[in-house]
Length: 58
Image (cartoon, rainbow, N blue to C red; front, side, top):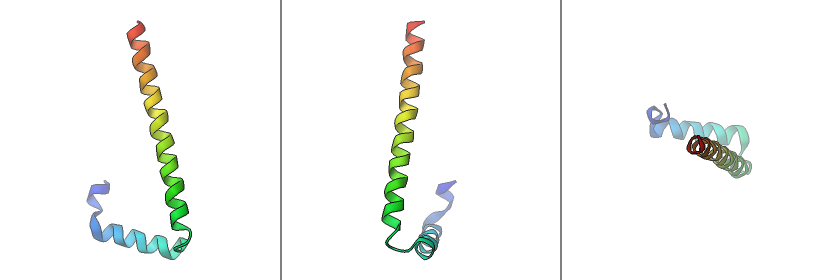
């Protein structure tokens, strides 16, 4: 789905975000989003590693 947005759509989203949150809040929101995604990926990786280890033990 994100591939279908395109450059004009991303620009529109950025403009709307600037209007809603203001330029001072956007870096904080981006940082928090990045940390959340990083933690989610880490947790998902740990779950798949645990699953692989359980399958090897069987």
